[in-house]
Each structure stands twice: as structure tokens, then as C-alpha cells.
Length: 311
Image 1 (cartoon, rainbow, N blue to C red):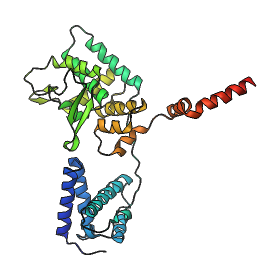
Image 2: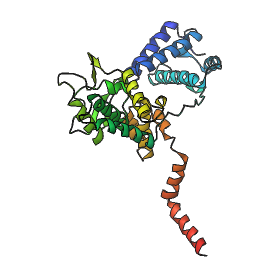
Image 3: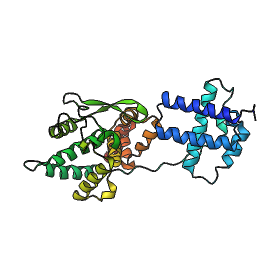
Image 4: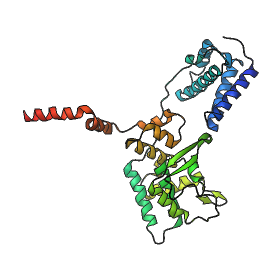
């Protein structure tokens, strides 16, 4: 082990690291809390000498994680690697022992996704509602909610807490403050803006929220309930539909349609491209079709096949 660092020094350096994560990396509060817990536990195991730990110390620490799931080990390793990288970048130690930490390659479960036919069924159910004369304001609200979830990939909390004037009729995007307080530009389809315009006409002009409810805005729980009711009406098992599932559908369908992964990352507000990469689970048959249709050798193969048929 390298030079000794007392427990108080560990705490101070962990605090400095987490301040950097919040201020510069824009880490969410839950991420900060998880990193704080993981770093504090590691410091306790190493008797307050985490910040000066060497490779052998981290090997012993890793052995204590053998009974944990791959996802837990991956999270702990990530927290420690970022901590040691921070210490090295700040000149607080001359080396970075992070290479001694395990990389379990934790598998991430694929998100639940609705296909295009499922989405069509949801919109058919909504259209049938708002076709009534006059339409129920609650159905206009539901239409706006679903159009924004599927058309822009908003998170549930971001959606229900939108200010009344967040979406302008003549502006095909909105500026959103998401996780970690970071701002991002979110594109808006013509359909979404039209649905919002119809709903906003029902909202009192002096109300601060686009989707008001009582003295505040619509709750996430109520949003879940509305979507599950719509799913049942559309003939889709309600457990398959949620705000997050519609966000997943937005991302998956956009990527399958040819969207750039980095652009999708920006639209979704992901801090790490690895989070966005989970949406690359495009159907294998579509990939084969794409290669056969677009690859430069596809045309040459077609000519060879034609010659064989003519022989």
C-alpha cells in the first residue's frame, strides 16, 4: 500500500469528488447518493485508506464482492474507478490503481418495447375518444400526454411537470431541464404540438402547469393509471404499457428508422452513450435485410445470381 491517508482525509476527498460529479458531470442525486455509499463502504473496509489504496488493496476489496450480483459489482467498480481517475487528474496521487478493479460486464435487461402495431392500437383508441362531439377535455389531455411521450421521449416526471407555456405553437422543440439540472433540446412533432394546442385551450391561462391537477400538476401515478386504462381499451395487456415503455418505444423506433445514436443520446438526455446503446437491439431480420439491400456488394451478388439463372 502507498502512503497512509486517515479516515478524515478519505471523507474530505470523497466529498470533493462528489462535488465535482454534481457540478461538472451533472450527475443525478440518486447517482451521487449511490457513489457516496459505495465509496464510504470501501473506505471502511480499507480502514480509511481508500484514497491511498494500491492494487493489492483493491484486489482484497474485490474479493469481498464475490457474493454480489454482476450489476452491483459493476456499479461499485465504476464508482471507484471514477474516484481514482479524479484523484489522478487533480494531482492528488501520482497513479491510478483503477485497473485492478473487476469489470464484470454486467448484462443489462433489454427494455420492454411496444411495436408499431401496438402504438397504432393506442392511437386508434385515442382517436375514437376525441372524435366525440364535443370531445371530453380529459381525452384531449390524454392525447397530448401520449403524443409527447411517444413523439419526444420525455420522462414521466419531465412530462407531468411541464410549465403551461413550455411548448410554443410555432416552435418545433422545447428546452428541457432534466436529470442533474442539465438542459437539452427536445424535438416536437407537428402531431404533438397540435395535440398540445387542443388541450391547452382547456387549461386556465393563469395556471402555471400544462397538465394541472388540484393545486399542483398531474402526478406520475395518475399518468400510469391513465396509460394502463388506455392500454386495456386498445386490447393491449396493461402491464405492458407505462410512461417508460413509451419512452423506450420512441427511442427504439427512431433508431430503427436510421437515427444517429449520438443524436438520440442528446434527445433522451443520457449522460453516458452506453445507456443509449441498449436501444441498438434492432431485430436481426431487419439487419440482414438492411445489409442485403444497402451493402456495396449486394448489387454485385445480385448480378452473379442473375447470370447463374441465365446459364
